[in-house]
Length: 191
Image (cartoon, rainbow, N blue to C red):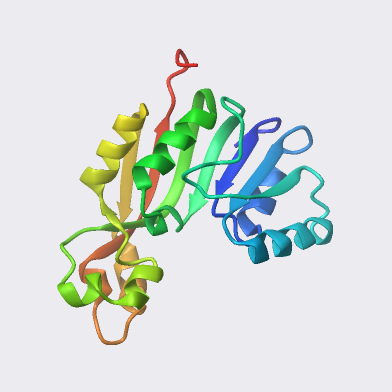
């Protein structure tokens, strides 16, 4: 991120990542946080004053149908949210839509490294807890490519398996998941 850029955070929650981004793009940049829960948007808006962040705004919406105009964003960020989206292709398609030519995505999320056993796939806690919705690297690359992105890089962080293994005392989720950074760019020639 650079001063003057517009940043969009997918699934912004109470705004933590937005406030960090605001420091990077100040004084002339802007940050937009989108979250689907009214309670989190309300909390994030309260946090604007606490963080003296007049260049940050929060909008209620779904990350697969962003309340953001076409080609108005330089950077799309997200921290462990995309894996929760049931329609990930729509998330990447809409991120592409809002990015300016040359814009980029920088996402931190979990990726699936091995097939989940049925008890993980069907477990409600796994479905809501950043587990069962994770995609493989190959699937993520295909979705980003289908959306139109180029320079796609997905870098698994093998050191995260120990941390992930602690998420569930009964199952070693580190056998199936790893944290990863996901980066891609919209072509400078594409409107």
